[in-house]
Every structure is written in C-alpha cells, then in structure tokens.
Length: 425
Ligand SMILES: Cc1cc2nc3c(=O)[nH]c(=O)nc-3n(C[C@H](O)[C@H](O)[C@H](O)COP(=O)(O)OP(=O)(O)OC[C@H]3O[C@@H](n4cnc5c(N)ncnc54)[C@H](O)[C@@H]3O)c2cc1C
Image 1 (spheres, rainbow, N blue to C red):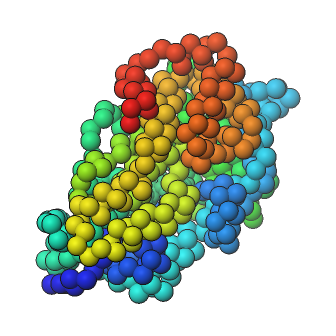
Image 2 (cartoon, rainbow, N blue to C red; image 1 turned 60 degrees about the horizontal axis):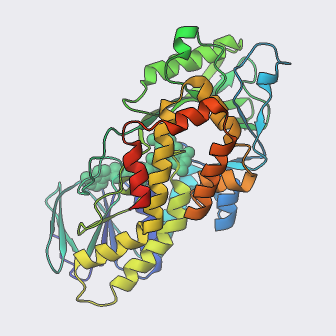
Image 3 (cartoon, helix red, strand yellow; image 1 turned 135 degrees about the horizontal axis):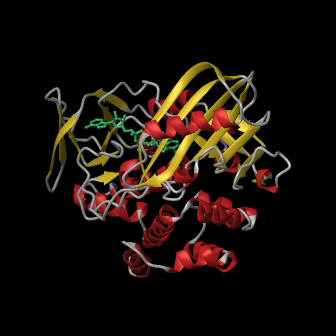
C-alpha cells in the first residue's frame, strides 16, 4: 500500500498525454506519481507528425527525425496524364516534421526524472474521491492517495466521465514503411493529403473518400498511409489497405520490401469535452484535446501542459483546497469558454466535411489552402483566437464554390446543436 499523504498528483497513463503533464507538474515542484499499465519506456505504436514552426516556437526542433520543406497536397481528380492540370500540387510553403518518437518520449521521461517523479506499473481499476483526498486502487491491490488524479488513459479513459453527444467520428489509417519499384512520391517530399482517386471505379468514388499521407524517409524508403479523415462508423482497415494497394497499382508501383505496418484503428476526432464538474482532471486524448479537423494532439500537449500545470500548482498552494476544487480550477484552465466555443466550431466543420462527397471535399480543401498561409496554419494547429477562427471560416464560406456553399448551409444531424454550443458554451 502506498500511503504518501503528501502526494500532490497521480497521473494515469504513459502515452504523450500522461508524460507531458507529469513533466510539466514536475517543473512546478509538485510531488507526482505516474501509474500506467505498461512500462513508460515501452515504444509508442504510432508515428507523430507536426508542422516545423510548432516545434521551432517551442525550441524542440531537435526532437524531429525528419523535416521536409517540399510539402504539398493533391486535390485534383488524378489522371495518368502528368501534364493534366489536376496533377498540379498545392504547395504548402512551410516545413513539416516527423518526431523521432523515442526522442520525444525520452525528452519527457528525462524531465520527469529530473523532477524526481515516481513510477508505478499497474492498471487503475477503482477511484474514490472525498473532501480531502483521492484514492486509486490498482490491479495489484495497491492504493495510491493523492490530492488530484489526472486521467490521461487515452480514448477509452479509466475513470473520466464524458457526456454522450452522438456518434463519434473516427479517423482510421493503414500505413506502410518500405522500398518500392519506383519512388511513390518525389524525392525529399512530404504529402499531407493526396485526394486523387482515379484508381477507384465510379461506384467506389461514391463511397467515403480517403487520402494518401506520404513521406520520403531517404535511402529509398517511404512511408505511405491511406487515411479516412473521420467517419462514423469508421472505415475498415481492410478497405484502406486495399485502396492503398490499388493506388500503387494504378501508378505502376510495386512494394519490394515491407519494413513496418501501422494500423490506426481508433482515433476519435470529436471526443466531447468531459464533464467539467467532476473531481478528477484529464489531459491528452481523453480530455477531448484532439484537433477535430486534423486529428493532431502533440503540439497542443506541448503548448498547454505548462499552462495547466501552473494553474494546478497555484490551486494547491492552499492545503485545505479539496480535490474537487483543484479539479475545477484545472478544468477552467484547460477548457476556458473561448476553447469550448472554438471546439464547437471545429466539430461543426468536421460534421460538414464528413457529409461531403468526394468532389465537394476536394473543392473545399483547394479553397482552404488558398487562405493566407498563416491563417490555415493557425487553423490546423488550433492557435487562432476565436475571433480569428470565425473570420477564417467566414472567408472560406465566401470563397467557396456554390456547390460547397449549398452543402455548408444545409443543417443536418447535430450541426445546429454545435452552433448553439458555439453561441452559448
Ligand atoms: C494512428 C494514429 C496516428 C496519429 N498521428 C498523430 C500525429 O501525427 N500527430 C499528432 O499530433 N497526433 C497524432 N495522433 C493523435 C495522438 O497524438 C495520439 O493518439 C496519442 O497517442 C494520444 O495520447 P494519449 O496519451 O492521450 O493516449 P494514449 O497514447 O492512448 O495513451 C494512453 C495510456 O494510458 C494507459 N492506460 C490505459 N488504461 C489504463 C489504466 N486503466 N490504468 C493505467 N494506465 C492505463 C495506456 O497503457 C497508455 O499508456 C495519432 C493517433 C493515432 C491513433
């Protein structure tokens, strides 16, 4: 039994969410334990990408394994005729990076070690919170007492209560790293989205659109990932695999050597914001922090962990503050009204995107990336103010072709509810 009455925070999980907040709490000199069902050194399963400017601003560009300046997307119909205007790339004119995920993990682990954060391996199975303390029981029978519990156990959280707000839109992806009979993308290139779909037949083109996300790793190695932006129910990985194979076949490319496969089965894009009056806190995917338009999270974790940790540390200054009161202050720091309203708008946008047919979607993205470069970058990284976000969405609406405008105007499903949440968070 662990009965350290002075433990400030117990962080549950060992993914990017848990490690980032534990490291930030450590910097605030708080006494923290991280409890995870697996060894915190266990390699993470996914590849994490990020825009170059995000890591530059944080002074963390050394954590990247690859960095590309030739960053493009394709929103044309696709055609074998290379001179076809449809094959002209949309140039993003800004760097994109891939984290060295081991370095990113070690970066946070080292910060935790420097702050003398302790580790406990086990599954959190029971939670009790009273006026003074929270107690978590682990699968091995240990009881850990702390002033605050932060549930960072991912998309199926251990204790966090999340409201049901309708079907969850899930991003799915199937990726491969390998060598190919000819380069599937240009040398030194990063492709954010290749929505060309001439490899599909007419019937398939009416089915939910998918895109290729691709990176040149150098030395004849490429990472190719067929992705469904978000769908409910999610698009099956078998469909994604078959579409990736068809895409390669259509372009006369053979996979010569398969080095790694990535199975992205569950990335919820519109996880609701958790109940903000519960006596525990959360961070990461569980806390609804994934960007509903892109599925990205790591940039937000790096930017927002220090802000949340400061608020928690301040709330803990008074030793008689209850777990519920500390959590309340934490929730206000993590989900201020402005962020709730922005999330409602982003989620509204995602609803629209999910309803778009293939051609509408391509037209939409062409217009989106015609916004001023700084504007679309900040949109995708959730760094616009609410006012700027409304402005950019309005600019998009005004510029959109009439077919897209029409689709944007028709309110379906929970769209009106989301707009109401934007008005009255
Ligand atoms: C395929 C894929 C690709 C992605 N690519 C990107 C990207 O390029 N860029 C980006 O920014 N984001 C990306 N994301 C989104 C996001 O960064 C990841 O999903 C990230 O792993 C979420 O971190 P997390 O710590 O919140 O949750 P997780 O990584 O899911 O970690 C949860 C942790 O909690 C532990 N746990 C669970 N239950 C318990 C319990 N009861 N007790 C104790 N421990 C428990 C688990 O073992 C795990 O350690 C991607 C997501 C997916 C699925």
